[in-house]
Length: 149
Image (cartoon, rainbow, N blue to C red; front, top):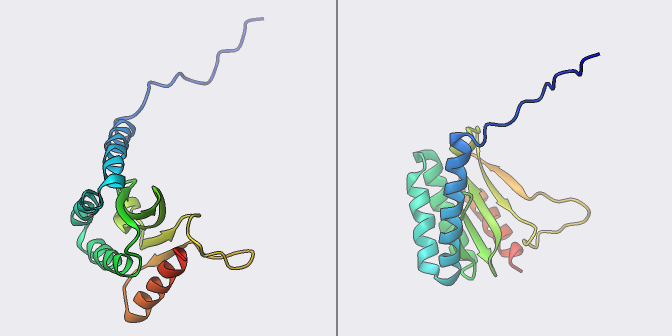
């Protein structure tokens, strides 16, 4: 009896996209280290990423940036996985994810576990974002304030 051939193939390594993502993340980690030390550098990196976004996402991200910086000036602007984010003590509290990033039908504004949004046994941590109305802006401002409380 002859042994069965293996049906699994050896991996040829990382794809070009995976290699590019790893290089981008390495650059971002270096930028994050600078941003944690220098607010202006973090904000510059964040604004550069926003400027690269398609118009619909860029408009949302610019307004989110204004809302967060106005309501939580102590959070440090930075990039996180190529997206605008705001951190305290080096840990991301909230972030914006463009719709174009994952070819989604809406952008996302989200919070990490460092945000103080706990409300009982279950609460939302990210929100689909299609437009910014005055009511939506007020809600985001209130969430950001609560997140840093």
